[in-house]
Every structure is written in structure tokens, then in C-alpha cells.
Image (cartoon, rainbow, N blue to C red; front, top):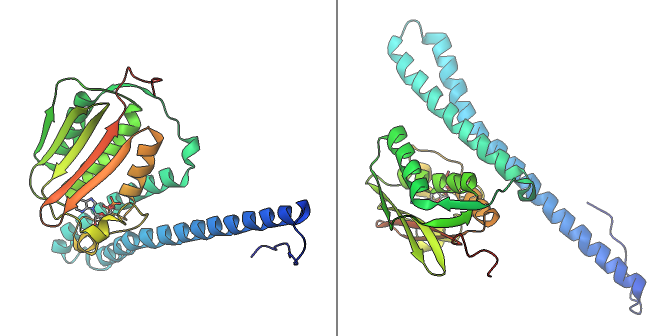
Length: 258
Ligand code: ADP
């Protein structure tokens, strides 16, 4: 798409080296451009699906809503849940579209047990799911509390979507670090899929078949948040057994000591 500098077979000198560097830059630009295009195209496609469902239910209501009240409940529920899905997707897209460098990160000492209990409560209240918190007393990490909450929420949301049993959040120390871990006993992820779940828009087929829809953005966002707040994110999973997601963090109080 961009014009490159033609490099004839010449003795190597500063000018030909500059030309080669310029061409490398063009290659990089083109690949970023392609990625951007792919992102926009995937995003539009993912947003179109719920929008199509909303449109068809709305038109059904418009035509038959008055004469067939039993359609009403079903249509409104579908419209509502698809609208929520679109809202979540848009929020994730907005975060991903913004350059990570421009995220405002505020590092501070965060007490993980309290954070875990707060998030567990949110999932219990919103989805009536059993969430147990196991914590070794107070555990302090050096991180951004708002972002960490976001990250934990993505993991809890997945545990809820892809399992039916109770979810466990574990908070503990593993010197030199500390960790917070979400454990579910759900459908699990195969070894092959595990290599891709952090890619944008990647969803395992089984997940696609489930009613709970996402766009495959959660974990890619989780990975970026982890990077931004100085955490490591690791996923272990066995199909049919369950998934464990671990966030490893720096303990607070040891910053600056390596
Ligand atoms: P989604 O919005 O589809 O949940 P994610 O990026 O969060 O997107 O996850 C990507 C895919 O990884 C999911 O579609 C699902 O197939 C799989 N996955 C993620 N978390 C779990 C889990 N806890 N158990 C089983 N599968 C999971």
C-alpha cells in the first residue's frame, strides 16, 4: 500500500542502510494497519449479531405484539439480554481500542482479601451464584485497585459463564509474590484452545454454543490489564474438570527492591 524505496544491488553504505530501515518501518506500519482493520471488522461483526437479534424481536413485537401477548415476555427478555451483551462488548472494545499507555494507572497498596470479598459479593448478588473466598488473612499487593477489580471481574465472569457449580477465590502468598486465584469446576479448556484464548475475539466452539454470549474479548483485555498493573496472569485448565486462573502480584512494601 505504501511506496517502498527501491534498493538496487549496491555496496552497503549509510544511504542504502537508511533505505532498508525505512522499508522495515513501512512493513511494520502495514502490519499494524492490517491488524487495525481486522479489529474493526471483527468488532463490527460481533456487534451486528446482537443488533440483528434485537431488530428481529422488535419488529416481531411491532407486528404481533398486541395480538399475541405471550410473545411479549420472550421478546422483551431477548432484547434486554442482547442489549446488555452489546453494552459489555462496547465497554470492552473501548478499553481495548485505547492505547494501553494512555490508561491511567494508580499504583497503591491493595488488600486482596477485601477486594476478593467485594467481587464475590457482586457475583453472588448479580447472578445468585455460590462464591467462596479462601484467604490467608490480610494480603497486601502493590497494584492499581480499580484495574485489578476489573481483571478479577473478567475471570469471575468467565468462571460463572462456563461452570454451574460454586466458584472459589483463593488469596495467598507465594514468596516472593502474592496471588489471587479464581477456581471453577466447569467445562474447562483443551490444551489446543488454551493457546488461543488470550487472542482477541477467540472463542471455543463449546462456548459459542452456550447461551451466555461474549465476544471473546474478556481474556485479551485481562492480559492487557495484567501487564498494565504489574501482574502476571496464568490459566490452567482441564476439559471437563475446570479452570484455574491465577493473578500473581508484587507484595506491597517490597517495591524498589527488584
Ligand atoms: P468470552 O467473552 O467469550 O468469554 P474470553 O476472552 O473471556 O471471551 O474467553 C475466551 C474463550 O475462552 C471463551 O469463549 C471460552 O471458550 C474460553 N474460556 C474462558 N474462560 C473459561 C473458563 N473459566 N472455563 C471454560 N472456558 C473458558
